[in-house]
Image 1 (spheres, rainbow, N blue to C red):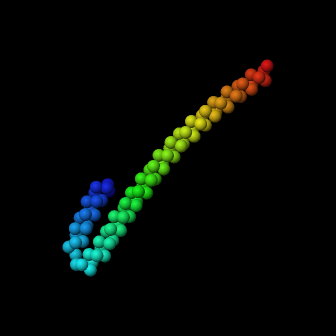
Image 2: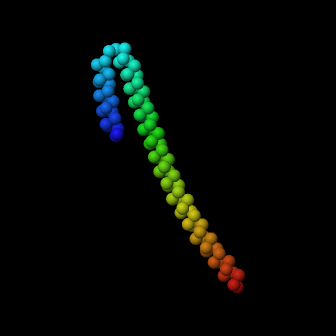
Image 3: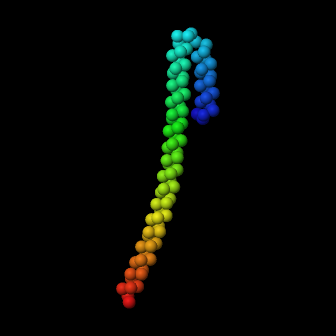
Length: 87
């Protein structure tokens, strides 16, 4: 369920809650407000996790780049050592 659909359904629920007797209305309004707050927290958490995943992907790319550079340098230095040993 996307954000727009969730908010629409929550508004419908709040409208239906307003038609109930007052004793039930307060309890259900409180539950609906808690649901809205939890939804906002979940949305924040998902957003933070997506940002962290993006950061990890970038970090892995840098690490792979560094690994490849280290391998190239290692191969170059081995070649230099082999040439020195031949002389």
